[in-house]
Image 1 (tube, rainbow, N blue to C red):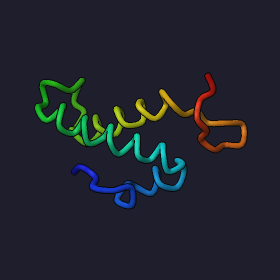
Image 2: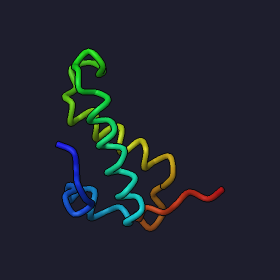
Image 3: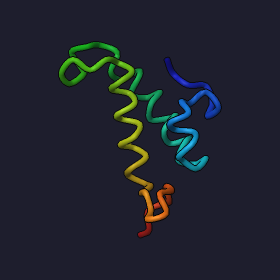
Image 4: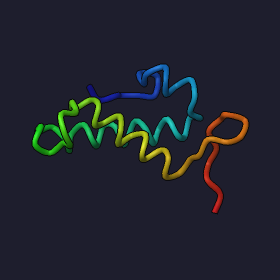
Length: 77
């Protein structure tokens, strides 16, 4: 189920990520949702939704990191 806007994201995403990271998450999720439609394109027995969430978190982690304050911040450098 692709997301049309950030407000539709799960609370586990909305409550921890800053707005720009939420946008990255949404776009990566939607892209992965399309890319991994067929089960044979996914690893193991992961569902389409599970795979899309994994891809979305990986995309966020490329640009953001969790700080000592337990909040997500853009990576430096």
